[in-house]
Image (cartoon, rainbow, N blue to C red; front, side):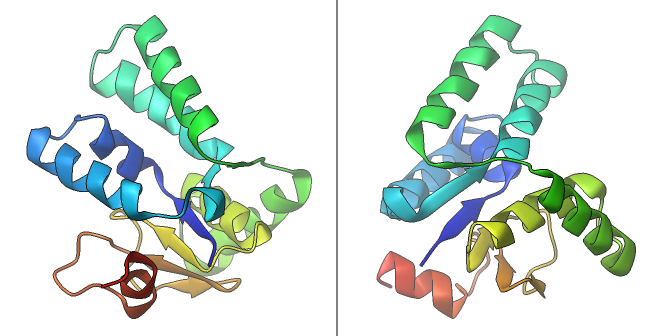
Length: 148
C-alpha cells in the first residue's frame, strides 16, 4: 500500500515540537515501507519554510534537512494536472490550496493513505484517506501497514 506524508510529520521528526514527539514520529517513519512511502515535493517546500521561518533554523541547515528527506523517499512532483485537481479539491471541499496540492499529489501517485495531523481525519478524496497517525485509535489501514 502506498502512503504519503504531510509536512507536519517531517516537522515533528525534526524535533520542532519537542523530543518526545520527535521520537514517536521517527519510530513511526521507521515502520513504514520505504519503497511505498512518498513525499509530495510541496511537503519539502513547506518543511523548509517551517524550519527557517517558524523554528529559526539557519537556511543552510534547513536545506540540508530537506535534501536528506528528498533522498529518503520517492518524490511526487507537482504537475499541471495535479495543480488542476488541487484547485478542484480546494474549491469543492474548502481545503487550503497547499493541502489540496499534497492530497492531489498523493492521489496521482496511487497512495491510499496520507498521514497528517493537520487535515481532517478520515477525509477521503481520489482514493486517498487522510489518517492521523497519532490518534488514540489507529486507523485500520495504518494499523495493517504497521503490523499492529
